[in-house]
Length: 203
Length: 208
Figure 1 (cartoon, rainbow over the protein chains, first blue to last red):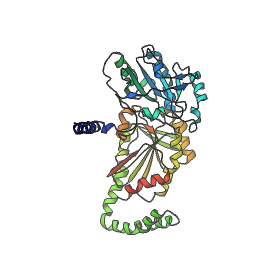
Figure 2 (cartoon, each protein chain N blue to C red; figure 1 turned 30 degrees about the vertical axis):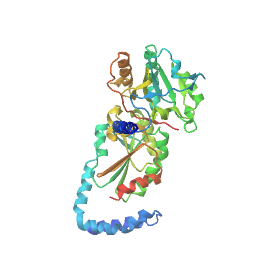
Figure 3 (cartoon, chains in turn cyan, blue; figure 1 turned 120 degrees about the vertical axis):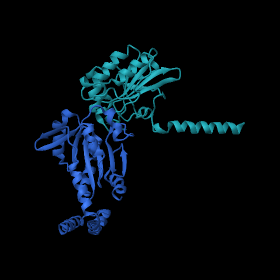
Figure 4 (cartoon, rainbow over the protein chains, first blue to last red; figure 1 turned 180 degrees about the vertical axis):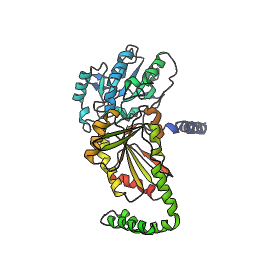
């Protein structure tokens, strides 16, 4: 009996590794359950995903002050929050950078930037750079769309906001909007992962 | 013709003797022997490859010119041949931007590859991902100020999701990133480099 159990476990382990071999590497894959956190926002309050009792999910954006790509997307991130927080998918922005490496991303500078731009969403500081590696974010901006499920906050989309960082008017595919719309309509997300150029996270 | 080539080889050898770089010294020391062997065996073929290489420099989609500096700009389709050069050279393709601090910090190491390997078949291509509107305001002044000796080109293709994986499937899109390849081998790195690390990575490519 015991032997059979070990054998079964071994087979399961081998089968599981066979299926995950292509997506090996740190961080979440679509379908994983994302960790919650307690991070300080620019209003000095601690924010956790569990605080959002009415949310259906989240648009978690790893972003920062200094990166030109992140800057290019600031207004679009605000627009996403304005459109989707009332539909149950608020934006949660997290600055993953270490200010010792990138002084422009220090907490007080985050406060200034949030005020200047009128961020409508929490802008959190990943103090000690502990959360972004769990997500597997590599750059800013880097988006994770989470959906609340009975198992926890499940990753539904990873990647870019849309397909044109340089010119919002020339955007053809709004990846994040399409994904959230699909979730809101109980439909399958067609594009679940995208890539974009971004600034390496400075840890 | 032959004597001309040999004399130029000697020149290269003597030019390197003051360098303390040991592997280079060894290579340059024996270079005339290699070259002589090369002349005997495949001189014509070499020349043909050289010509082919020069004639296949990809055509840019746009050319920026300012203060005597010319930067060729490519969309991904036009740029793609830079990733598939089929000759004897090892290419070190670095993706960077003037606003990317770690990229700028490692540039001198790539410049050192350009100067230290100038007598070998190793070529650095610095692929700037600066925004198009910043080519004239940032990229050109930067290349002038730093007096960059490596080839600098500009890649501008907003639909990054469509092309990042074509550079390498492992690339998340973060820069700096570097691809080292020749016709038989390629390796991709999403990381920063010191000169020693670069040298260590280039060696197995260069010794094929």
